[in-house]
Image (cartoon, rainbow, N blue to C red; front, side, top):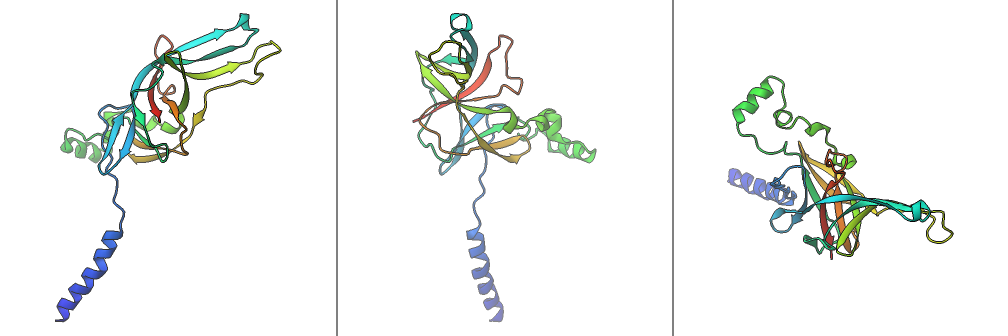
Length: 220
């Protein structure tokens, strides 16, 4: 009898604790590495690939510089094909590929026994990648069948027009390391409606022609 009462008491004490523990998110591995994905947190957590585009560097001056100058990256399409309806609590993920399961657990064990990190052997640059310093989120300007990130617009010597140096709005995000080579990028505040793009110009994503790789989406 005492034994039964013990197990009944144990049941009612342990089960509520287990039920109270929050469910850990199981982050899926993106299909492609070194790309920013939208983290869709529905009943089943999944990742959505963003629009991948090549932003062409455009630089121009007005009236030989008297009217000012501007430079930025532009790409085709006035709206992204990837649309997000929820503007609050948006999260994205980024993977260097180092967090992907290895092909041989025995090889991993052997490397660890010799003081080597298997993730580093798969991707030697993974530990040097810091999304907070290499990835930037911009709000893009849209019009005339194109989108543009304005890096710098300087005023000219003319007496009319803006006298301030301008650039596209940046939005900050907090970085949460999920595991080696895998991070969650949590947008710090609500995003207004419009077009957006992540740039990774500090990660060797610039091309020989001066263009850069962008990961774009729109917020409705």
